[in-house]
Length: 112
Image (cartoon, rainbow, N blue to C red; front, side, top):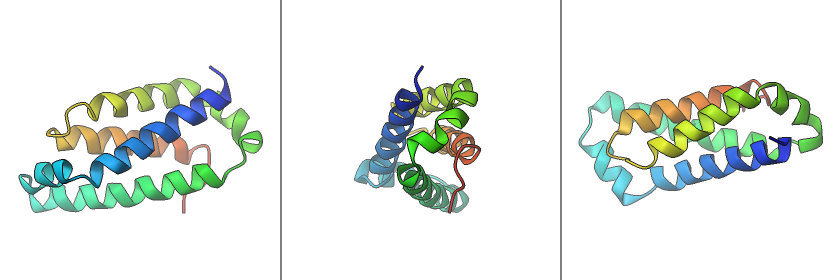
């Protein structure tokens, strides 16, 4: 997969996750969870925003090689996040999948 496709898929998954985590449906899902889960969800939302900013500000030309080197992990983490977002009532799955994608991207660009 081309670096531009990896980049596009990752940004798309992250922005979808951010929009989902700002929705009333997500709020209802996390309200049913524990205080620790709500805190973790809030922290993950901040991480997602920072990751979107870092990735958006990076020049694709500068990170293309790193994206190719991490292509398998990036593709897997992106797919996992997309799958997790299909059922936002499973808050832990969404948080874990988002965290995995953020971790892969942190290997490519420095996060804030």
